[in-house]
Image (cartoon, rainbow over all chains, first blue to last red; front, side):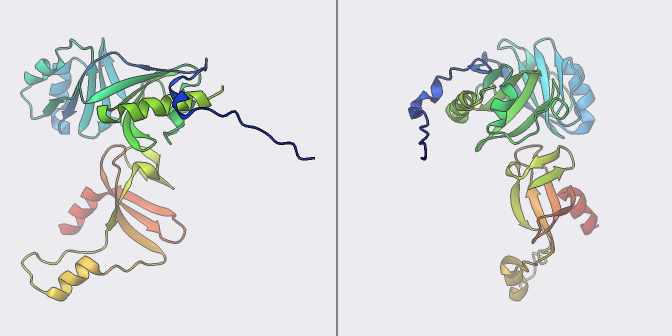
Length: 184
Length: 91
């Protein structure tokens, strides 16, 4: 005889309540964020202004205290710092040609933490998140489902996902639903 | 399909946007040769084998790329920055 298997039916709105121990999806604290654009010849001067060496290699970051610079492109960085940071004022002092736009309120940060964190992000992001390809400290602009995100690995099992605020509900629900599916 | 971005390394195709045929050449903007403009806008060869195309790595470093791709097997034989290729051709 054929035995019928019954899947447990979940209410669609239950995505907001993952009950898993392997990964948590939480909101990051408010932060100061700056989109920094400049050509290669200004990198040294801007690094001095910021107090950290702007990374020039793909998928890399540089941090100094609470301040972090994420390589997004050959002429583009995302600077993230505490909410009371002076980074915008610091960059205003730089005399080299650059563009620094305060995007603190354009982005929303989401923290994915726990031993299943990479699997949760991989639920919608096609990048290889093995420690070899995406080590601790690596960051990259990439995609999550149908939206663009910036992904930053803070620790082996901890990722920061930065998305645009209008996509925040989508990203948050997506990651929480992904966390519910990750049973590791 | 995996595209090897010269900056970012191998990335899934969903990070990229197709931007069209990289083999066509715009006629002289001062030209009023209707056949040449018609051909530039509408004619596409759609070859069965190797083809050159523009792609944008929008979900990554945001660089424009020129990719040589086999239209039947999707095998990618070369990836380069569009800026260097276009600059090389115009000089």
